[in-house]
Image (tube, rainbow, N blue to C red; front, side, top):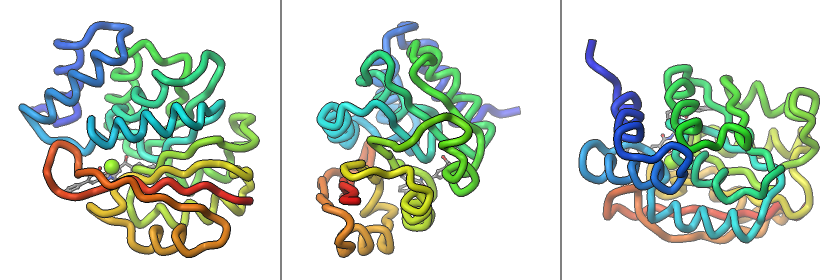
Amino acid sequence: TRSTRPQRLLGAVQKNATRGDPCSVIQAIDHFCRNKEWAMNVGDEKGCILDAVVSEVNPATVLELGTYCGYSTVRIARLLPPDAKLITLEFNPDFAAIARQVIAWAGLEEKVQLVEGASGDWIPRMKEQFGVKTFDLVFLDHWKDRYLPDTKLMEECGILRKGSVLLADNVICPGTPDYLEFVRNSPRYESQYFKSHLEYTKVEDGLEKSVFLG
Ligand SMILES: Cn1ncc2cc([C@H](O)c3cccc(CNC(=O)c4cc(-c5ccc(F)cc5)cc(O)c4O)c3)ccc21
Ligand SMILES: [Mg+2]
């Protein structure tokens, strides 16, 4: 039977990237998506903004909502200090299977815990299951209508601390209007918009960085 796009993306990584070299994995995926098949990775342009925020926060604990093929997982994990931990949630088993192999090809398995399941089910279990008290950085890139409910859930579960940074992809395209209105108007967040473009296109998109004020 015909392969899937994630399978073809993994093939491009295994063919063109060097094992243990995260930058070559990132380049191989960006080349594949720009020249062969578009895929919904955060991409190179928004990826540079993601890199800057990760470097600024220098997080010990990161939560990623929506792994997909692991592109942003690799982008983030490659910048983390040695004993930092990235937990990434993926509910789609086919995406999870590809992402595990992409993360392994980059040699970043030690820093990444990929959990198969839905954000709503796992956010309440972070403390007991993984011994994580709070997250220094959360990258939101899953279903756009889940950004707001999951942010409220993270607050309720106490996994955000004063200064925790939320970085949300696609706030313009496909768009997350309810989330944007919330973080921009809530007194409990200091929000900033980073204008960019939808991955591999000229369409406007951007990242919203929101600092939880406790
Ligand atoms: C609950 N829960 N918990 C974990 C979890 C994980 C997932 C999956 O990883 C998953 C599956 C399908 C879709 C997404 C969201 N991503 C998008 O929909 C998206 C679209 C576009 C775009 C833009 C323009 C187009 F024309 C078409 C697609 C550009 C982008 O960067 C995207 O991130 C995420 C889902 C729910 C989950
Ligand atoms: Mg996205």
